[in-house]
Length: 378
Ligand SMILES: NC(=O)c1ccc[n+]([C@@H]2O[C@H](COP(=O)([O-])OP(=O)(O)OC[C@H]3O[C@@H](n4cnc5c(N)ncnc54)[C@H](O)[C@@H]3O)[C@@H](O)[C@H]2O)c1
Ligand SMILES: O=C(O)C(=O)C[C@@H](O)[C@H](O)[C@H](O)COP(=O)(O)O
Ligand SMILES: [Zn+2]
Image (cartoon, rainbow, N blue to C red):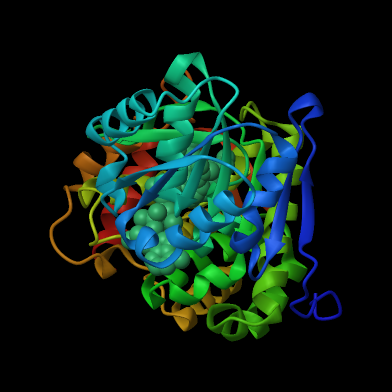
């Protein structure tokens, strides 16, 4: 990875998501939002653009995007939602869908999701249903969105009964990841996004994980390593999505840490108490520890994964979540709603070590319950 680290250059890195006639590019590099208008004009001449963003992102980046669209001769309008996970709700969906309809966005126009994973998931889902399907562009502005949520077409909102339970697969037609936009992202959000970067190493690429152990500071503080980490993450995700777009098999590997993490997020009320990436960090540590419990993975790898995430400043234990959580049965009820459940049986992403995750079906719920009960006290 060290040799592959690029220096920030005017030319963006390009990663292609190979999905036949729905293939698209991910452009990665600093300063790309200033040129997004020209890219969209070239992709879809004559289209109008409805920008969906949140109040925080609007404050820092909406002006740049509006100016770029105007300079390219594109008419745009903006729908600004409240920041935070609670916007991925029925009410948030109503605000965006009604906003798109009121703006008379037509089928040949475009929705532009400018923001983190919340904006991307919500705007993408709204695009998938308004007028039975509008195309959309992802302009991810958080680290998490640049390395994960803007790619692969999972869109949706949360239910009180579980995370992302209402949604659709709807691929973007273009992703523009301006790594310079991350300079305005709060440090806690950067760290949370980093959990999904570490995920790619932990699930399938031990060499990437080795590199991350040395390079994480530069990735978090922002330098050439950051562009390299975004590109490596998108390359890893694009390959998995291309071979299993709708998660009938391998794509579930991207869910490492998420069965536990999503239950904790829902248990914390989708609030600032636990960000998605933080839940994933705790969930990945639990998935490694549970794998070791089953004799699948060495204790050394459990410690190595946990130490790395702790070094970055991420939570790694259930007890790191501030405030009350549901009891163990309550968490098991949330886990039972996981989308990977099949014929009532739990599916977990377990591991044989760093970079060796696999999909485990028919996991014994009683053993997970006993493990969780113990981990709550750890
Ligand atoms: N669809 C997928 O494949 C996928 C993958 C991973 C995560 N997700 C979802 O993504 C969501 C989490 O995304 P997130 O971590 O980006 O959270 P987020 O969208 O809430 O953004 C994090 C915070 O940072 C702010 N922000 C974003 N970009 C900023 C910038 N450049 N400058 C200043 N502030 C900025 C936002 O306003 C928000 O307050 C969760 O809902 C998760 O379920 C989806
Ligand atoms: O793209 C995927 O596939 C993922 O699982 C990526 C995850 O990081 C992401 O959080 C995703 O939204 C989780 O999907 P879900 O199907 O478990 O809701
Ligand atoms: Zn995730």
